[in-house]
Every structure is written in C-alpha cells, then in structure tokens.
Image (cartoon, chains in turn red, orange):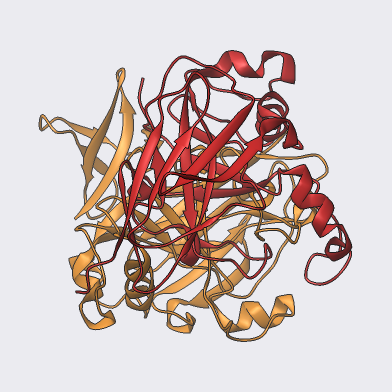
Amino acid sequence: MTVSGSIYGVVLNDRAEREGMQPQFAQKPYQAPPEAPVVYMKARQCVARGEARLPEGKSVRAGATLALLFARDACRVDAANALACVGGVALALDLSLPQENYYRPAIAQSNRDGFLQLGAFVAPVWPEEIVTRIDGVEAHRWRLDRLVRPAADLIAALSGFMTLRAGDVLLIGLPGDAPMIGAGQDALVEAAGLPALSVRMEAEIAA
Amino acid sequence: MKRARIAHRGRDLWVTVSDDGQRLTLPDGTSLPAQGAHWLPPVQPGAAAYALGLNYADHNKELGFAPKLATPLIFMKGGNCFVGHDGDTPRPADGNQMHPECELVAVIGTPARKVRSEDALDHVLGYTIANDYAIREYLENYYRPNARVKNRDATTPIGPWIVDAADVPDPQALAMSTKVNGVRVQAGSTADMILSVADLIAYLSDITTLMPGDLILTGTPHGVHFCAAGDTVTSEIEKIGRLTNHLVTA
C-alpha cells in the first residue's frame, strides 16, 4: 500500500476557527456558512519529508494534522464504517503562504513543491492531540476534539459525493491558529503513537 | 500521432490510434477496430490535474464576473473525477443546473519549473479534450468552485486520446463546441482564452514543478446549457477529436 492517488485536505474543520469566523460567514464573499466539507488538494509534487524550501523572505503557516491513507475505497460509507477504509495514519505538516480568505482555491499559496510534509505511515492510531515545536519550543498544540467533523464523520460526508480511493490521502483538518515559521527554523510535529515528523525550513535557492 | 488508453483482456494498455481514428494498434503490434474499444481516461494514475475557472472572457460575462480576474482561478481535480470516452456520468436527481464545459487539456511531457511563456510549449506532450461538468446547485463560496461541484465521481469525461503536440502547432487557434443530443449548445475558440496554454504553464511552473503526465484543463467558453439524464453530450475540438459522454440517472 502506498500513496498512489489523490491528496485531499479540508479547511474550516476546526470548531474554534469556525466560531471565530461566525460573523464573517454571513457577509461577502461567503454569504452563508459552509455546508459541505471545504476541500483542497495537493499534488504529489508537494509531498516531501524533512526539508521545505520557502520563497525568498516569506514565512509560511504550518498546520499540523493527521494524514489518512486509504486501503479500501470509501464510497457512500456511513461514519460507523468509515474508519475501516483507512489503512494507515501519519503526521503531516501542511504549509501555506497566508491566504487572504477561503473564497477561492489557494493553489498559489499552498501547492508549492515540498508544501506537504508527510511523516511515516503506521497502522491507524487516533491521538488526542498534536504538538508542534519550532526550534525546540512548543509553538502549537491542538486537541483533535476541536474537529467539527472528526475523521469518521469527515470520510462519511466526503464519500457521499466523491469516492476516497485506495491509495488516496486525506488530511483531516488544519488548526485556524497554526503558527508561522520561516527559513532557518526547524519544526517538530509529535503525537502519541505516531512517528514524529521533523522538518527543516530553508530559503528557496534563486534560479 | 494519437495515443489512447483502453481496457483490453484484463489489462489497461496505451495504444496508438490511426489518423482516421478507426484502428488501434496494441504495444505488441496487434491491430483492432476502434469501434467497440473500452476507452479509459488517457490519464496517468497519480498525475496532478489543474483546472481553470473563468478563463474565457465571454463565459465570465455570461456568469456575471469581470472579464479578467486579477489572479487566475485554478483548482485541482482528483482521479475519481475522470471517465473515458463513451462512458457514463451520473446526473444527480436534484442537479437541474448541470452543464457541460468543453475544455482543451494540455498534457505535460517534461518537468517544467519556472519556465517562461516563450518556452512553455516545449514541455507539452500533447492535447486531449475534457468535459468538466459543473452542477450549479452545489456551489458554495468556499474554495469555489468547491469539490461538491467539481470533484464528483466520473463527472469529467476525458479523451478519447492524446494528440501529439507536434500535430497541434498552435493550441490557441482551435474551434471547440459541445452538442447535446446532436444540437449545438456551446461554441467557441481556444483563441479566446485569457491565459493561453503557454501562459498557464509559465504561471503554474512558478508555483510548482509540473511533471510528465500532469494535466491542465484550460477552461471553457460561453454557452451554459442544463442537461438531463439520458442526454448524449459530445465535446469536440478541432485537430483533437470528439469526446462522447452519456448522462445517467444517479
């Protein structure tokens, strides 16, 4: 089993972030709160482990999350059967240049080479929280009970209109308060039961 | 030359297609009639598929958007979306505003990183056709066009084949059209793209490395026509071919 398919993630799956944005949801450009999960994708070219190159002079938002690797197709599954489709779980650090809002897909901000740092997959474990250290100092900690749709509910909701196929990866949500990190800094992502993910941020080499 | 991917006796195979589209040649040299072939999406598994929204000024006007956006509207599509020539696409019972979108697709042939527009077409392997259906009822203003509109299973017919770039010297001078049950509902020209194929490769290659097999669906011109289950939809692009799709009740 390996990552052979598409890589999906969701934003606005953090309850704290949603509560903070509540007043904005009724206004332009959104005009209504999100109903379906808000999906983004990353190309295989985004996947790396250990080093990320940031555009000259830019810092990035570093969102620690879980990556689920599908071992069986999930098509119209209910939440009770959703996790049976997952074959592996890894820590992931999703990098993105700051996004103005969530109105348009953020390919230019989020789909750069190396902007999905993916740890080693192991048989599914479901940690309660994920901790990110920057240069050895705790920079972020989030409990996964903040997820509006926990993994099983998220898979069920997505699989109602798109099949998550064996070999696909799903990132289950990004914290709205993810820390910023710049070139020259090191990130370490840790969660109970999962191999830690260590990432060195370097400046992009000018062409 | 044209290359297609078909299911043949338990394998998926890349085959060459005769100039008239009537014969297929398998890798071992066997020749078959194209009629009755089981066409698969001519897509490499795991390829990145980038798609453009609002890349034709006349279509933007039709939908009430500015003729040219300040930032190109680009989203990605998953492998679940694609369905081959002559395949079926589910049309949800409540998808009354489901419309076809004929699009020229550029297939990348060599890695492209920070290339200039002038050099960008050197990185194109060939071209195919996609019909990137949208269902307007499912639009939400979050990462719009959102996945529920654009990432549904089998809602992006693609094919029937990839035509070599050498056979399409100017990708910006191709007539394109959509017919529903034989009636033309969409007509345009790739000349009206806001960002050309070369511009799009240059833009994307400034963000990421485009890899062999990656796809760019370059957007669709004017002509929104809502379809029903049972419709046969044909997307045609000059010098590339004709892509047929059947809408079925879901």
